[in-house]
Length: 189
Image (cartoon, rainbow, N blue to C red; front, side, top):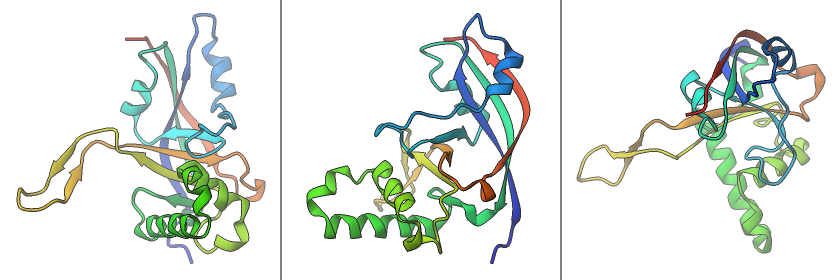
């Protein structure tokens, strides 16, 4: 049972902006669906940043970008498989990775985040109690590690970048709704 039906959050979607682009047309086309290759971190879907700063920095060293701010509404908070802030979901993911590696050791190199999420999506009947095939929230550790104290090995992970991927394969009946709030362009730096 959910404690938070109609779960809403802000999210930002980034894309390339060309001088010939029309901002109103882009607003109507966004968010953009990602590719479907093995290099898509969380498989094919609509990728959003969880904060404006990361959205405005993404690929800005390569080209001008456009950033759209949305309100995303899930029918239920359990539809977001949260690998950032939900300990149950994180343990579930790590347990599945252990199981896959143990029972299919020759395939172990393919069990990346992408590989495990693809397995979950391909086998929904096995995991429906935790994974609903709607969206995933994940973060990368591309930033600073700060020890809590000098006498311990644990550390604080500072300034992670968090993303949400709404899966393209999500059933229409439970597909999240997104509402455009604003759109801006940023020049390459």
